[in-house]
Amino acid sequence: MNPLRRCGLWLAALLLCTHATVASEPPVVRLHLAGDSTLADKHPKDFPETGWGTPFATFFGDALQVINYAQNGRSTRSFRDEGLWDQLLAAIQPGDWVIIQFGHNDEAKHKRERYSSPAQFEANLTRFVREVRERNATPILATPVTRRKFSGDLIVETHPLYSERVANVAKAQNILLLDLDSITRDWFSAQGDAASRLRFMHLAPGDHPNYPVGVSDNTHFNELGAREVAQLVLRELRLLKHPLIQYLRTPDPKHLQLEYTVERPSH
Image 1 (cartoon, rainbow, N blue to C red):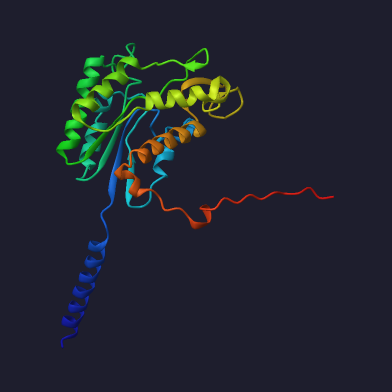
Image 2: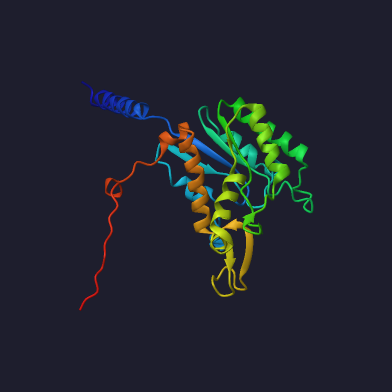
């Protein structure tokens, strides 16, 4: 046989084998996150501020890709106006999931580029849901996470008009609602004023080089607060036996048994 022909047949067989191997691998499903700073990944200059989407992504194995489009200061209005929503829509494939969490910035009347009235906010969410469904993907709505504002022993509700609108859309569109406003408010209220403060961005001058004069912020989480909120979301998905649970990371066998090491003082 002609050597060139033999080489061509060998290459063709190799390509067929490679194609068969790739085709046999299950497709990667995507979970897209749309929202504001309480959900977003952060630049190192903002640390220790952390959005709950960052630790949440680590809960899943390689069969699910988590893509976080959330950005600081975004509302349903500015997220679309700045093209972030279009980026998300362009990346959606059939079978994907989209978690949508807004409200903090929609209610900021003093910032015209962000503000949406409650009625506009509801209309924006309804449009988001419709456009996700048009791409054969599944939307999930989340109420905005709580701010840390105590009245006595309890945190007061700070998003009443906007959380209610999220719930209205979820009910009207018959889709899953993650009521993070209530869940996080109960969680941090139970911790009390002092312990909950350790979960938000409170730093004294000199504690961190990113905040040389300190910071007192009852909206944004640090690493601990963000991880706890991510765990609360995971707990809700487990309670609901939600399909996303099938994509959770497979634990290392050595982590299935708790081990405690007690160091005894030497004499």
